[in-house]
Length: 200
Image 1: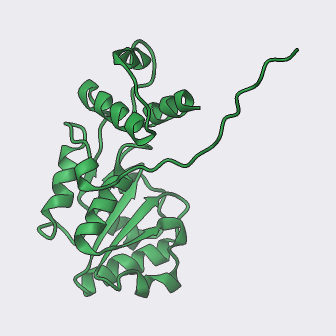
Image 2 (image 1 turned 60 degrees about the horizontal axis):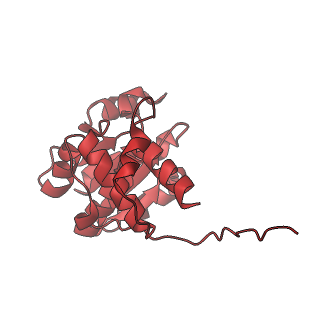
């Protein structure tokens, strides 16, 4: 006689990206201040960079809600999309990575300057490390103010773990701290992966 098997149902879970749900720590405080000090920015275009899961999209969402900015994936940016991209006077261009449409990005940066619009770029690597061939674009990217998201400290990582469990309506006890001891990768991406496995 075979034992009954438990079925794992893949239910969607919501994650809140409001300002109240953004967990601040030493690793992301500078980026949060940049978002919150708008429109008092050091330049029309700024960049926030950091590893996967470090909070770039959450920060972009906070900024978009404050400014009415459009949000656009860099993969969707082409020359035809540039005029409409700045229709609201602000754009969060997310996940910029090579290869990219260099001509479109160059025109976007120029248009932002001409229209007194703001652009928030998010990427995993600083713009100075992007493999850009267009000299004029490379020059503009070198001049951008860049804020980097650092690795989280223990307190922030623990707070993020608690939030991830709460987002999935999971209750945990103090023993979950052991998940990130020893040689485990201590990053937001690793935390998300671990919580997803435990949820499953």
